[in-house]
Image 1 (cartoon, rainbow, N blue to C red):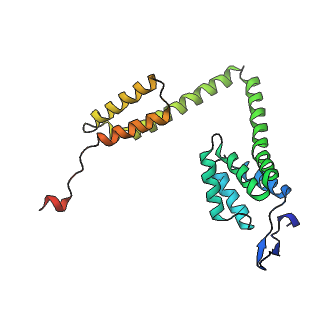
Image 2 (image 1 turned 180 degrees about the vertical axis):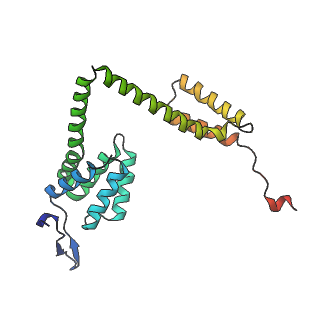
Image 3 (image 1 turned 135 degrees about the horizontal axis):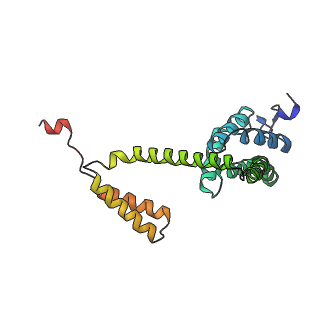
Length: 205
């Protein structure tokens, strides 16, 4: 294990032992390795938590705070997490290094894949494969949606589901934002909820 990857302890002003922070090179390597070997999102954040936590550079409380902050920011959450993590460990230099390590390799891969797809898209076989993949993906999404909706379109819930669906369609035509549509649908769902079934103990009284 190299010197930059070992945990070095030094006494602080109170005489207690503390962990050193990683160098920019070590931070860049750890972020590059953990972010780019997963599909991003919470998986990458969890890998960074384990890697940095094992070295004493990130506590569970700090990790939860970084996750919460990243979820509130627009865009890709894992990149927001990397920026916040880099800032906590090395301020603006760490933020820039962590952002580059987490985004540049994936951007290069996507650019290469896009360029390759542009060149091979002219072949009929490739177009047929893409079309089949889109059809399969659509069927899977519809099947999952059907399984989720089935309990709500029974005879007892059909009217309530139809009213909520009609309201959602009207709001979509009015170009209302998705967040407001979800809030309105939730309000209608609560208002039109069926009465609670009496408990067995109450029925037997």
